[in-house]
Structures are given as C-alpha cells and as structure tokens.
Image (cartoon, rainbow, N blue to C red; front, top):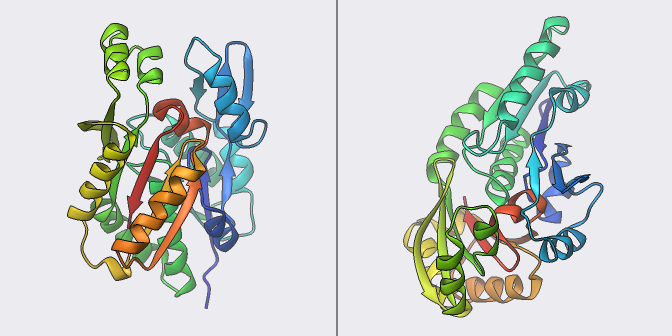
Length: 281
C-alpha cells in the first residue's frame, strides 16, 4: 500500500519523462538570468531556447536559488509527510531555502513531517534518487526506512560525464581563457566525476568519441550488480549523441533500465552545450 509521502525537488533536477510520469514530483523553480532577463528554468524558458541564448551570450548565465516562499507553496499539500531533495549544498543555497521554509511551515503545522535531503548531487543523479525512493514508497516503506536507504544511495551512486567544450568554464573564470582556448583548439574533452557534492575534472581525451568512450569505461569499472541498476543518460541539447550512448550501453551492459533526460538550464550552465552525463544507481 502506498504511503502518504509527497516528493518535492528543485529545478536543477533533470528528469526523464518516464520518471516524471511515475512519480509526479513537486518542482520548485530556479531562476536563470541572461543580463537583466530572468526566467524560471523549465517553466518560462525551455531547453532549446536556453542553449540558443547561451550560445550567443558573451557572459555566463546567472542562476539563483529559489526563495523559501516557493518551497512553502509546495509544502501546502494534503500529504502528511514530505520528502524534499535539493541540489548539493556545495554548489547552491537551495538546501538552506528548503530548510528555512520547512521550519516556517512546521511552526503552524505541527502534525506534518518534512525531511529535506541534501542530495550531494544534481541533475540526473537526483532524478535517480527520487526514482528509487518512489519505489520504496510504493512498497510501503516508512519515512525513517527511506532516509536510511538515501544514505546508501548517496554512497552507491556512480556519476561521470564528458564535456564537449570548456566555453562556460572560461566564461565563468574557472579556466584561464588562453589555456581553455588552446584545450578547445586541440579538441581535448574533459572527463568529470560528480562526487560528494562537487564536480571534479578527473581526466581528458582527444575528440568527442574518445571522451565518451573513456567516461563509459569509468562508469563500467565502478559498478557491480548491473542487472539491478538503472542508468540515466543526460544530454546538453544533443539528443542524437545520447541515443548513440544508450545503444552502446544496451549492447554491452544488461541494466535494469536505461533512460534519457535533457540537461536543463541549471546544470547546463555548468556543463555547456554538447555535454553527456551518465549516472547509475
């Protein structure tokens, strides 16, 4: 029997449509701004428009954490218990906003229970956690049991990616402009790992196909019990590339499920267009 637990997350989470259909989570929008123009990601600007605007913008888009009021609005639901997942607190103050809203709401609603989880991840990694927790809810697990599982999920998650360009890292000042342009000119692609709430460059490869191959090798060498696991492939406005990766994975590894999600404005601001992320749980 399904427990009365409502799942809420923020707009940095990138969902495959299949998970949205199964879970129907509440989503708190996060703003992304191009100069004076501000949009709620996924609501007021779609992925294609976002990447088109970012391509023509000399400066990196700015993202801002949602106010506690946005969380409060979603806390006002019929569910007795609410489970909230936020983008890693090491990259955003969204977690703090969710906790502040929780404290405000519970002052007048003592009968409710709200648990806010710092995912220590983002994008498709959070989507995977939410999928697994929804399965636990469907199986009648209690909130306390689910919270125990979440700590295991954080430890077990495998999350790698390949960046197609360092353009946004250059715009954001995280990579020296001259060095970044040389790396791009030589067609070197950076391999990243999302771990303990941080995005870490761990390797590089020459050319897009080599970088994807290397990222997949990292994924493969870090997983066991493939048949019980789900993988999500995230793409930054490059669906054809994601479909090819899905085909390669399906031919070589017998995952329980392989899903594809578009990378939205929040994570897309970090990755730049053309990136591929692969997360397994």
